[in-house]
Structure formats: structure tokens, C-alpha cells
Length: 253
Ligand code: PGA
Image (cartoon, rainbow, N blue to C red):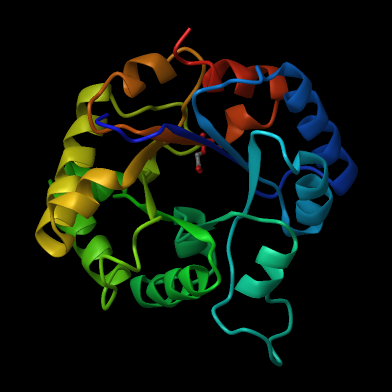
């Protein structure tokens, strides 16, 4: 893992009311050791961001949003901008999750604009990529990843991407209980890193954290984290319960 600090990120998706999110965060705060050697992020729904960020302030838990719209403000009913997310106390934002691409029309082009808005507002983008089951079966995994990275990161300089985090989330492994094997994860992560080397040089490529996502659980996190290019995890279902998520964060022990 070179010198990359691990990041365990919880994506709560459309689960938890504001009070439920606060309660889970409080529970997690009581469970976590003070000196965890891992960055920890949780991404509650928009309605709970400010409340969760408020109680997590100064702790080792950072808060992230699950999406943003790239304009700063305007007549865009129902949308949330990067400055709004930042002012709610967020440090991170998940961009281009496969559920956004599948149900809400996110494309490589809109993902690119969203990443730009995140960077301009000092939010750390967690840029999600990954192939579908059909694409894997037809051996298109690498070409899909290649295209998603090329288009998603188009027109950025290496300086822009200093804080970027990438999440490799094979669509067939999300919420299905099917995890990519550690070999499959390592292969995809190594491919992504080699692509980053080509586009942005060795130094940046070596510093970017690449998370694995898709049915990560307490019983598979350690073997995934043992792979050289797996720098953390983006966890959905197993991040909703504080005790279970804590076990994932404590993967070393
Ligand atoms: P899962 O979701 O852990 O429930 O598979 C991962 C994700 O969608 O980020």
C-alpha cells in the first residue's frame, strides 16, 4: 500500500432519518479507538449531513455527501451544490456511484463536471468506476474502466487531483453478496493505477487511494486490504450498523 493512508468509507445510500443517522454516528464514535490508523468517512443522506457533521466535528470520523450538482446556485429545483455540502461540514463527496449512473442519468461527462465542482470547493471526490456483469463476462472490464477514467478525469491537471480518491465498484458485486475475489480486485486496482501513471505520472498515481466497493463485510475486508493496490473500502450495507462497520474499520486486528 506504499504510504497511502487507508480510508474506510460508509455509503448509507437512502437509509436513515436524521435522528437515526445521528444515533448511529454517536454509537460509532463510542466504539472507535481514539488512535485508529485509518481515515473513516460516513455519507448519510443530505437531510442528515449537517447534524452528523456537527456531532462528528473534531473526531476521527469525516462526513461526505453522496452526490452533488455542479452549479454553485440557481434555479435547479431539488439539487444540492458543492458549496452547500461544504458548508454543512462535509469533507468528501461520492461522485458517479453506479446507482446514480443507472437510475439518475449520471454519465462520464456529468461525472467530470461534478468532480470539477468538488475540487473547486475543496471537497475530496470519491470517484466511482466499475463494470457490469455483462461487461465482465464479455471481457470488457479493462476497456470500461479505461473509458470511465479517461472521460471522468478529462482536462484535470495532476495538481487538481491531489486529493482524489477512486472507488472500484464492480456493479455485479454491489448489494448482491458477491464480492470480487481479492485477485480480481487487485487486477482492477493495478490496471487503474497504471492508467493513472500514464495520464498523470508516477508520483500522483502512487499517492491516489483506490478503494474497493461491493459487498465488503467484516469477514472479507482483511484479505482485500492485504492486496498492494487496495487502499480502503467503500461500504454500503455493512456500514449501516455501527458494530459491523467498526469491525471493518478495525480490519488490521
Ligand atoms: P454494498 O454497497 O457494500 O452494499 O455492496 C457498496 C456501494 O454501493 O458503495
